[in-house]
Image (tube, rainbow, N blue to C red; front, side, top):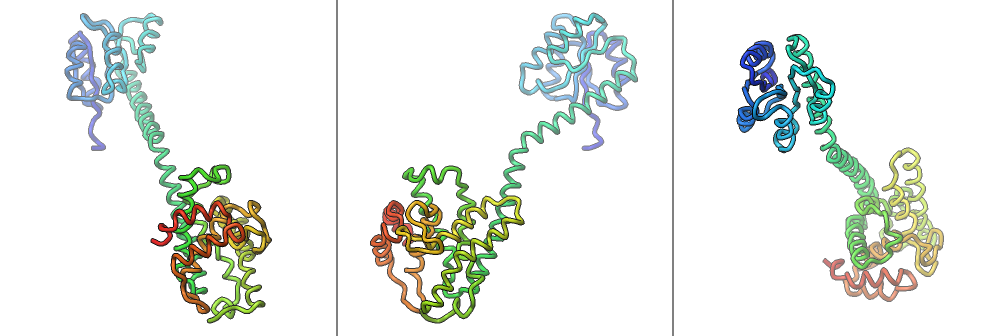
Length: 352
C-alpha cells in the first residue's frame, strides 16, 4: 500500500537509546527495535526493512561484525545501513563506510537531523532500485520496441505486396509462396555453410519481410498488360520487364524518406535483380554470375518455381517434378549452379 509506513530496524544495546530512537521515528516509520545484533538477525528472518540503524559498540557482536554478515547474505546485502555511534574519530567513520554503510551518525543525535538523513537516504535507495530495475529491463524494453517496429514494417510491406497482387490477380498467393521458398533456401544455405561471406550480417527476418516487395514495380505497369488474359507479345513483354527497374526506383523514393532503411536495402536488391540470369541474358542490367546479388539469385529460383507450378492464362501448371527438372536443366544458364544444387536437395520442402 502506498501509505504503508516503511520499516526501520533500530539496533542498540542501550534501552534508553532504543526508546528515544523509536519515539523520534515512530511518527513517520514503522520501527522494530533490537538490543543486539543476534536479535536483529532473528528479526530479519521474517522482516526485510527499508533501513537498519546499527549501533557500532555492542557486546558479543559489534556493528562492524554485524554489517559484514549482512553484506555476505544475498537476502540482506542490499539493505541500507546507517551506523549510530558515540565515536567521532574519522578513521572509525571511514572503516564503517568501507564495510558498506551508507552513513555515519554520531550520538547523541539530533532528531530533525536524524529524520532528514534517513529521508534522504531512503529517497536515494528508492532511486537506486528504480535505476536497477530500469537497467535490468532495458534490454527487454529495447527488444520489445524493436519487435514492434518490425511488426509495423511487416504490416506495411504486406499491405503494399497485397496491393500488387490485387492488381496482378493471376498470381494470387505468389508473394507468400516465394517468401516460403526463400526461407527454405536461406535455411539450407546456412546449414551447409555456403556463401558465408555474402550472408554475413544479414538479418534474416528483415530479408524475409523485404522479399515481399520484389514485384512492387508492377504497380507502374499498365492494367492492359498486367491483366491481359493471354501471353504477352514482344512489345508488351518488353514493357512488363520494366517492372524490375520501376520497383528499384519506387523503393529508392521510400528510402529518401526513411531513417531506418536496412529492410529497404534488401527490398531494392530483390526488386532490381530477381530477373537477372546467371549467363547474363536477364534484365534489367544483364548482370552475369556472381555480379548478380545473391538475394536476386535466390529469388530467381523461388520466383520461377512458383511461376512454373502455378496456372497462367497461357499455360497449365507444371507438376512439381517437371518444375524441378526445368530448373535443374537451367543450372549454369539461368540460375546459379550452387543454388540449383541446394534447391534440388531441398525440393521436397518446396513441394510441401
